[in-house]
Figure 1 (tube, rainbow, N blue to C red):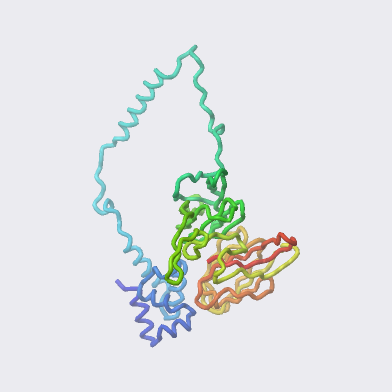
Figure 2 (cartoon, rainbow, N blue to C red):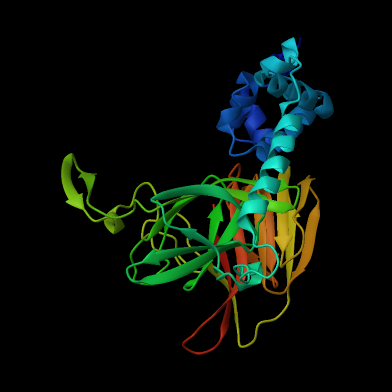
Length: 375
């Protein structure tokens, strides 16, 4: 069977192209080109980006992109071992469930004869209807650690001090979701972890890890891990010296989530950009012009996620009322104009995720259209 990496490497070498030249021509970082030729798929931030880079690189080398995708799929299939039962066959067994059902029916009949009153007796104990049972606002988080599957709108209730506080999961995208609390909405990336302050006291109450976002039978769902172990002294290394610090001082590892439009990390590499400032929130036009190959995904307001591979000369336009998520595999070759204002989205070869959203200024009542980094 052909090796995907070998096919790519041989095609490049036959054309006399160096990795440096390929990086320059395709706008794909060299480390990703090397990962494709070495079949090191773990080097990519996600399969979506891998597929986009693979198709673009194949076209650049004059190869059939679909054939390269098929080779990649074959590798993935070989990595998945079939269950042993499928190989040797499952032995037939006696249908014991039939016997269990018969015994259960007999047991219920005998029990009902002795337990339930028969005619003229005292009134049977009243069983409350399901609607009369006390209703929780959401799943109650009582353990130290909990992991489960959540859908859009699912809520979690946890006790902090003497009070209950609730947060919910909203607006599932292909790579992100929003955590909604009493303090505001917080974007969280798939595979990312952050500390969340649900009580509003400025201290982290729970660590939230989004393991996976997938499309289930009933719609989008996310596998999320919740962990209360966010408080207590930790060891921070500074210049070879160690000292005990409170968890909110630790800048490395898991960050404390900040509301949309703000950040709690002074050393954050990217900061929010104010694109427009107006007295009223209005509909704006978002226009992206592509100068090279880019795998681009977007979600405007409450619409569906739209994904497409753009080439040089392509243009994307959309009207936004409240917010828009923008995912780009090669941000530096994209020229963005938001409401007529040119905005930079990243560097060549950089994978970037941005949230474009209206934020109200509580001091003077005006509105800012902000570009918030979410990756």
